[in-house]
Image (cartoon, rainbow, N blue to C red; front, side, top):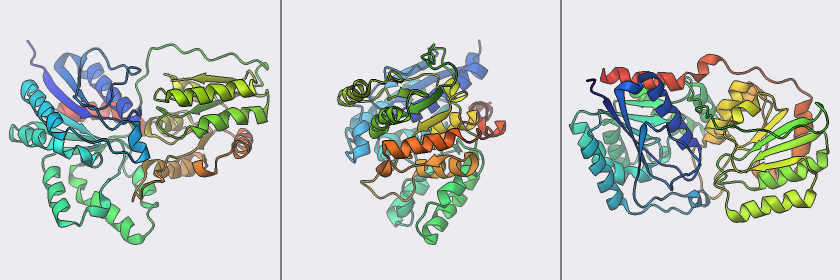
Length: 406
């Protein structure tokens, strides 16, 4: 009988889809290639998302007292119950005794989770468990504090517990865009110096591509023969920027019957937001706006749409790059707080440079500016899709994990 490799993953979300989707893709890659030799356990630390599907082979464990809901995007930090959660995570680690432990985003981000993770990291390190970080992009949350003695000592001690930091982008691709965002040369140098300092532990895997679900999705038929332009509007999970949906509905009314809008409002949209979107759809009543909570196979729509309008989250951007779609991007920014880095702004810069994306600030978004941007996009050819080697992250990540324990 084959002894299975036990893998324990810790991740959370803020009712977003990005972190969940990436973990599901990695889990699927492990099952597809090594399914008969792995036992997968996922500690899920946010409010359970009923609209996502982990593969049946993965054992999902909900950490008690979920926190970090979509309220955190408004600056409301719900972090609490550290002691309860830390004990629960450690107890699960002692029961499962994993060969591999993976933290998602931590320690480069999600530093609020240090109290609940540190006891388990120390325990598993003493057991010689292989420990990895799965990080979507080259971002470091605490760059401004890296030279503070207490924080620096603590962080360096945490990094020593990790075998590798897996960053799920092509090598150095997004780093260049991040570096361009800093207001001063000093911060830029700090950023570059930090990633140079962890270079020996860092592996760039390539982009992790969202798993293709078998859930069917039928798009509404065109009503003006084949001359009707299809515009895809997506708000990710729907935790931020509701004005994108409202503006899109008004924009369709400006553009007229030649354009139909298929809109994914986001499964985390609040009941008040849904009522608002529906009221605008009824108010303009053009018959060419179609609202959905969630579209499971956006990648298939990106292949043929005239224009995509979206935020600049990881998973949506990866699918847009693969498709070579015409794109209008409204990158998310935390206007209520100062951050030294912002992954959506960095990725928007990359999309603008490589795929001629039009970037619009949410604060300046209006139906008229959106209508003008769409008309201009429709007059240009589609950009070439990104090179295939950019998207090897699923298999590469699975191979790195399994080859290490073998």
